Structure formats: structure tokens, C-alpha cells
Length: 215
Image (tube, rainbow, N blue to C red; front, side, top):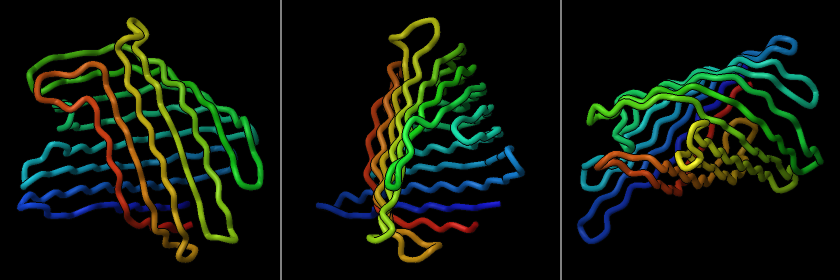
């Protein structure tokens, strides 16, 4: 069993305008032979003068079977996304991934999933359908300098219309203080081609924070 908690944020005041940015994530995973199951949460807050423009929460469950160079997985995800004016989003699907590079300092995987989505917007718009979800991940570490790094990108076009898509990425650079604590910088992007009035379809955030891990 392993547990990891990340806390990143920025709080500043410039010319009388206060800004708060907070990103938190927690993940808990259990392994038994080739089977692994994880539960994770993500929360992001962006506030200007006390008015929230981003207030997003996601809960994700992902069981999978892991072999030496590939994995097969399923997942379910439930979200409340103020930035997208979505009161509730459900996503669930199946997929598989394969290791494409493994060296001393870098490992990468490529995966593909197909999933069903159901979106309920604050203006009562309702959308549902299926999306493709290819994903690329790369990560590694340099023990001598206590550095680790991670990158992933998702491209999720609708099966019925490639012009309806979601594009997300996350890049993290960390410095290990010890075996449990890490200082990190994280840059995230999130673009959705479909959006309703008042929502933010293109979000970019850069945050500094810490990670805590228990194995």
C-alpha cells in the first residue's frame, strides 16, 4: 500500500488585488501480485479578490492489471467543475498501456482508452457521448542531485466529432528533501473546445509546493 499527498499554491497581493491559487491531490494505491487499485482526488482553486474563477474537484478510481511492459485498466471519475460551469461530470471507460522507453533516467508509456462521458452544466445544458483518450507519460529521476521529473499529456476527441476535444497536460519538477518529502514546481494546462457562457475553456497554472509520500 502507498499514499501520496501534494500541496501546491500561491498567495499574493499586487496593487490591492489579492490572488489565491491552490492545487491539492491525494492518491492511495493497493497492490496484490499483478493487480493494483488506486483511488485519487484532485482539487484546484483560483480566486481573485475572493471571487472563485476555478473551484474544481475530481474523484477517480482505477483498477488495473500490470505486467512487465504493459497494463490493462478500467476507470471511473466523478467531477464538479466550477471553471467549466459543470455541476457534475461522470467519466468511465477501459483501456491499455505499454512501456515504450525504459532507461536509467527516463521511462515512458503510451496508453489508449475509450470512455463514456455525461456532463450536466449549470445552464441546464446536458451532453453525453464517447471519447477516445490517448495519453503519453514520461518520468524519471537523478538520484545524485535528488531531482525527479514527470510529464503527461491527454488528447480526448469525441468519437462523433474530432473538433470536440479536451487537451490536458501536466509537468512537474521536484527536489527530494528526504525519502518522504519533496519540493516541486508544477505547470498544468487544460483546454476544452466546447464551453458554455461564463466558463473558462483554457486554463494554465504554475504552482510551487510540497509532496508527502508513504510506502
